[in-house]
Amino acid sequence: MAVPASELTAETAAGAPRARHVAIIMDGNGRWATERGWPRLVGHRKGAERVKQIVHACPHMGVNWLTIYAFSTENWKRSTAEVLGLMGIFARYIKREADVMAAEGVRMRFIGDRGPLDRKLRNLMDTIEVQTAGNTRLNLTVAINYGGRAELARATGRLAARIAAGEIQTPTEADLAACLDTAGHPDPDLVIRTSGETRISNFLPFQSAYAEYEFTPTLWPDFTPDHLGAILDRFGMRDRRFGAA
Ligand code: IPE
Ligand code: IPE
Ligand code: MG
Image (cartoon, rainbow, N blue to C red; front, side, top):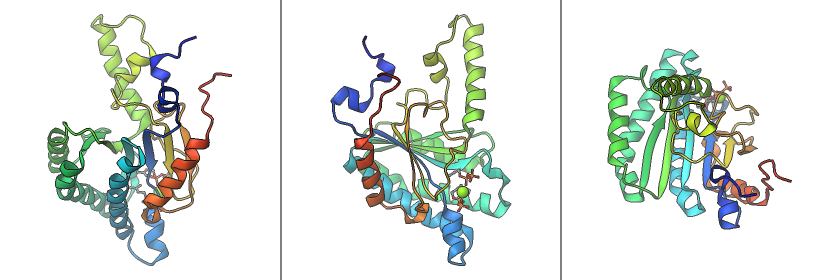
């Protein structure tokens, strides 16, 4: 039986297993700083430096979709100082990296609910999405104020509107996928979580239904392109069956 197009992956299509789309739960910034007796924000700043390195390394490693979890819908529970500090780091990252993204062919997009974010940050996000829309070397998606359950709730609303408009009668998986924030993005092949926690904390639950998972004890500020390379090598050894025998 033919494999449905939606299940064609890098390896079934090309015969060589490789993770085309890597998603990362970048965790452990706070512990990294606390271990050194420093404020948590120092860890977040160091974490942002790591993002730059990993973004730069991905295309050299055959990864052309990278989705990173920067701020969850649950992270508002943190102190105001930490939340504001993180938002400042996001804004600076977008401003300072705009030229690099242009030079390196990075298309930057965001998923999550932008409504509660500061207007200046939202404007920066909108602008960089437009500026980088023509780039194809790396698709970088940043999850900010993202939660998988909230995304599914939003998607359900969009789907209901399409059903009410008579565009859809019986919704399919593809119809729901097309209503998610990630509409048009391929599913992640590999989800990595740093810092030793072995949970997904509301990250891409629908999209990662058949992803491979890697949990590494390395804290995000210590995670280098070499760590990523080793994980990608292991990914190449995995046997992905998608339910087939
Ligand atoms: C991940 O690091 C970054 C965000 C959640 C924004 P943490 O801040 O969660 O670091 P730990 O888990 O407290 O060490
Ligand atoms: C998940 O990390 C969110 C991000 C990495 C942005 P958390 O540190 O917020 O997750 P929990 O609280 O340990 O589950
Ligand atoms: Mg954490």
